[in-house]
Length: 325
Image (cartoon, rainbow, N blue to C red; front, side):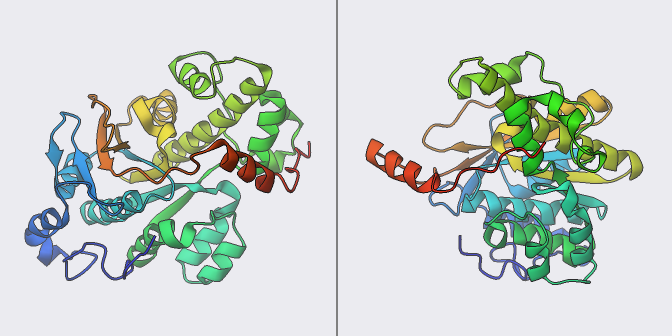
């Protein structure tokens, strides 16, 4: 997506991305006036409260400012979602200077490199070459990390690694015990893969067949959720007073079944807010737990079987890497 001066102007129509204390009285007017009433394009969104009412960004920020964790679900690469994330993060940082950005898009081994980047010891080229940053970092996640860099905020590399996920998908949870201790610290100590609503939802999404292969894939899915939840709760334990805004794929956030349930299993005293995207063409009904972000749907990736075959042939040119353990 095209990002126009994100590092300097997060809010369209505002004179400054980061509002100072003296501008606080004008913040509500500035942000509210920049929020479209309809999600007309891929750059527009509308926020719906848990009560089913349209609200402004400023109203949402005020509504979640006292939550320990704000979980922001996303449709990866959607321009409006990533614009919203940057605007929300700036608004939350205005309300709590101890805001922390937690990201699915970086894994635990990346933490040292991210810290060096935020401290100004290395540039963005080194950040991207020395981490497992997602390929859409520059367009979609750079604005978030840049807000953290400018404000002196912490960024958490919250996720587990691709190697661990691959091994879990192939062999199931028992493979973790066979990994070196250095690798084991990159995944949550506890992986709950027992039956429940989240597992039922995952299996239904995958076709409903509870095969051994799908059990492995579910273990991989759980590793993402558990590791992100563990990263978040451990940071809050050692940094009281912080608020964490975590960005992750929508499935991890929907209904509080993924990351949120695992956060609360670790610490039932923590409070969470959930934000999930929803298509304006087929908006889901709200629930008491979630804010909804109404957005226009992305274009269909494929519209015919021939395209699927062509894409499949291209994507399987190289055999996938196998689990090394």
